Image 1 (spheres, rainbow, N blue to C red):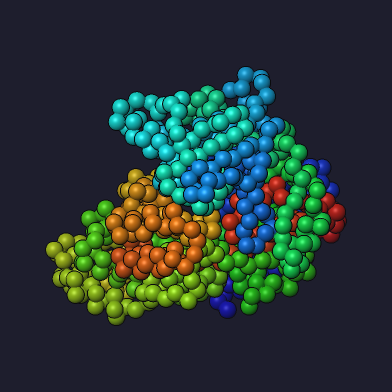
Image 2: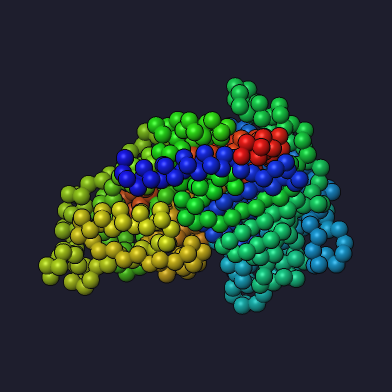
Amino acid sequence: MHATSVMKLLSCLALCAACSLPRAGPLQSKVLRLAFSVAESGFDPARIDDSYSHSVTVHIFESLYAYDYLAVPVKVRPLTAAAMPEHSPDFRVWTIRLQPGIFFTDDRAFQGRKRELVAEDYVYSFKRYADPAVNSPHWSGILDLGITGLSALRQRALDTKKPFEYDREIVGLKALDRYTLQFRLDDARPRLAQSLIGGFRGAVAREVVEAHGGSIMEHPVGTGPFKLGQWRRSSLIVLERNPHFRDVAYDAEPAADDVAGQAVLSRLKGRKLPMVDRVEISIIDADQPRWLTFLGGKIDQLEVPPEFIPLAVPNGRLAPYLEQRGIAARVVLSQFVSYVYFNMNDPLVGGYTPEKVALRRAVSLGMDVDRQIRILRGGQAIPAQSPISANVSGYEGSFRSENSEFNRAKAKALLDLYGYVDRNGDGWRERPDGSPLILKIGSDSSQSSRQNDELMRSDLKAIGLQVVFHIAQWPEHLKAAHVGSLMMWQLGYGVVKPDGLDSLERLYGPAAGGSNLSRFNLPAMNLLYERMLGMPDGPEREALFVEAKRLAVAYMPEKTTVHRMFTYLNQPWLVGYRPKPFQTGWYHMIDLDPEVVSVAARGR
């Protein structure tokens, strides 16, 4: 073992012995303590586009539907809806009835009155995605739904350069009465309910948006189990129990043979939600402090940083010193992928001509993903063969492609063939016209990113390509990516529903600037995507996924590196925590055991 690893191990073990579960005394109120590794961007469902902010908004704003907390495979169940949606035989008309008696948290915009959630709130919330002034990164996903008249309403605002007409009625989105919402779609959408789930689809109140205007990102007002209590940007997020949250009892449907899930259900069924009073989220971007904070008992749940996997789960088993403390571990093959995108509008790496495709393919072939998994991820990932996430339709474990291939000889041959050669003898290749060839890649200052950057720099240097990394914080890069000013960026992407088309949205032309950060716009890919939107699940649709994957690998607008595996640890007093794909919210679904906390405190 490397000397620095030995020192880390000794320091961690010393800390374990010294602090031994040091959460303070019996609980006066139940406070769930967590840590994010990356800063949030804000809390407006229509504007955010990152999983960290979504982890917060999903507990403040409520969508019509949610995924059952314990069911595997996923199961859709009503959230603010009174029942599952009714639809016409052709899947083009969907009618949803809301539960009455759901209220927003207090806000000055309501002028002292108790404000009930009604169908019109969802009409307004969905129209916000179409408002050019909102500039929602989710517009492409809403556009995919084909809500009749919504795109035309957006175009009217663009053409007239006037404010978006929220009061103009459209055929495709109506409140039939106070509690009944109806969607009319241009084409069949058999999986519509999946698109109505999560913190990106939560209902906002029009009065609040209009009252707070430009500050709406920091002023979330929803109907969920929590409200925003405090926010220090990029430092601390505090959620407090929503005093107006309706009576909701814990319920779930684990599989009959899911012993652990059945045990959780038995213990918590019927409990009023939320079971904790407060959630405190610290932003700790450095891996070691976050790891040590968990070991010190100061946070209740941790996604183990890759470099600490050998200390947490050596050889795939929970370390004895953690097991003795009652800490539990769970490894999940997630729906998240890591990928490097190429800006297809960039004059160096973009374009569809053979020499531009060759450059991108050479970069892909020159990246040693197995080494990245071993060194950076502690073995907690599998190489990706295509952009399609695991655990979704269109994903095949047996599918193989060049996307995962590491072959420096082939990479060099491609570069040579298309004129990317070293003309001046400085060791770096130039463009075919002789001008400098420098790849500019977005990155950040975190330890894990620095390690990743060095591996990528080493890999690409080995094939003669020079790399410069632009360092900035995540929110800054995200803004730049949306406007198309980054040449390349490596990031993660997690789909929010079990339809593989969510993954392909990254490569769908009309989604450019939204989820499609590469701005890839290939007519053949767009056609496949649009055909699959209206098709029911089945072999014919799966065959189209194969075609789409082959196109993605052939043109290489992104190098999808890995399917990410996450190892989660939780403290012994955290009751009911069950990480799984498509989990859209869990802070309200867990409890803290005061007896275990008290025992831990006495054991210090």
